[in-house]
Length: 136
Image (tube, rainbow, N blue to C red; front, side, top):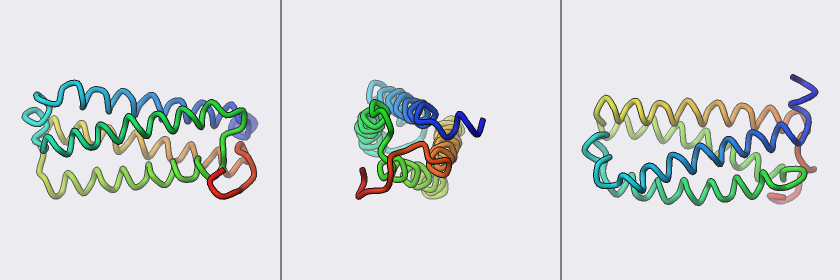
């Protein structure tokens, strides 16, 4: 694993997984925007705004995944953003009291982004990205 984790292919794969999961989540939230607020017990504006954000984030992660060697600054930003998303998920559950299905939806996102953040940090630690520059 250490050899694979130190290759740009590893980090590109993680970025593609991040992009795909965000695109799927965001697209679902946007396409079912009338039903999900009732099912999840969450405000429609929260689901709409986060859905739009997720699709935009997916496009940025996909762009980074297309680079021969992913930009180190961008990967670090994605990892930090994923940890922040997980913290935000915990805050949403605590503050908004979603339904059981809503809690499951939020928990799945939190777990997924924490795994992705860990893999992104692993790739950075093992040197699978371009040298440090200002986000590039």
